[in-house]
Length: 429
Image (cartoon, rainbow, N blue to C red; front, side, top):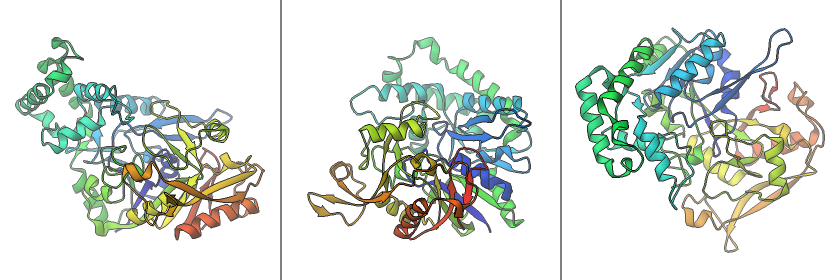
């Protein structure tokens, strides 16, 4: 029963979109299992007959959509923004990429409502802001876990929709009244808007858990796609500076309604260095010219928000934790080419706290903010890798750098990306 999970092993933005797109030609189904439109998976399709490459940023639709034979599933663990979804479908269809008959949306996926975005933005104005995208993800998950959320299936029953809407608006009235005028949160207006949305997505909605289980019985292959990264997991990440769902491998089963016994492989996508968007501890962050150089060469700006990413050296200590929590067996290392021009490259191998070695990665904020990274220094290769198409053609210094990562983490190096295009992907194994 072949389910392969592809997840970000750092703080997100590792290049999962490209890796999923690259692997999708080998599978039947790509299924997204958590998060919302706060994700930004970038896929670049090569231009035809001298035409420029085409750039796509997907927020909800799985990155396998660019392969005609692949069915794409948005699972029950995703929180769905109607406006973002319809915009994405329109972008794809107008670019000649057919979605009809290939996209399936869980009837149990929770919906992001207009007030979720307002609540999210309001909470990011205070002193205790987390640094979220402001897309309403957190408030939607709050409603989900207080059992007041509105699901896709609720759009079929106007009375249920009215009751839930009225309750949610009234319970947040104090905050919402400072943001909205009363007429803007008209229950009937929202019902009409979302039932109109239901008409447009009705052809895609189904019981996706049943669909996936049936596919597994037929021996079809499934790629489970995560959003964000493992260190942003609400249970296992750097809490409270985390996302509101489970990007870790365990989230794939609950977010898609598939059994753990169906999973046979977990692949961790890792940048050749580290980045983080938003607030929170970042032990290897470089706030100097080197950090700025990484940001500039790597174009490190959020695909969803455009915010500049914080940059630093690769952190193998946090990655070791991610490998253990997720059961990562294989690594896909991206953006190796960003390091092409550096004389020396540092890699964090462990931390100290008050001069004492840290035995385990600390997920509590107070300790993680105070740790001091200890580095291993590697000689740079000082040559371009972006035009190389065989792993064996990589410079000796680059292969030594990658071999150290592989051995230190106790995993298998599987893929190396040296650019954003599909053909700039090298298979090590």
